[in-house]
Length: 153
Image (tube, rainbow, N blue to C red; front, side, top):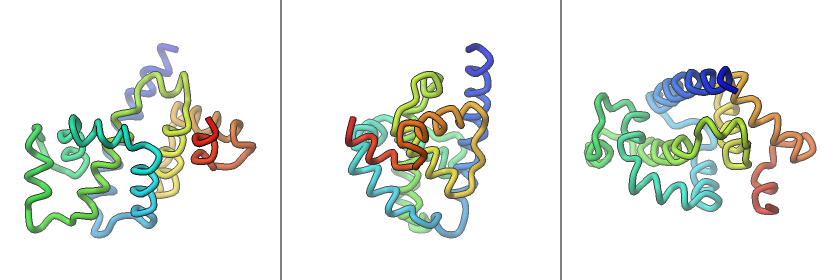
């Protein structure tokens, strides 16, 4: 358990660095709007918490160095900011904020949905992150339909 906690901490750093590079690309990834709509529809509480409390995380993922609680607002108000990527940064922050060391121990459909999406965008899951998606594959009879699993549960 201690080993996987350490692996989780390391994978969080790697994942968030990858997200920063994803958001640094010229255009948002394919399917970002569907991901955003699904996040709003199925994980609205996470988004509400993120918009209230995770401005620093969203700004940091968007590449702001030394973000503070005002950084996301400043980012959004800059005329050079791509609003699509600003929205995506907040959606990613909502999911990131809901992940913790508990996520691999008690995998749920939201974490699996998020990690499957990152994988689709080119992220390589770590061993400990794969524990979450492997569990979801068992729960959904070998499919990545975590949305159906979540609404059923």
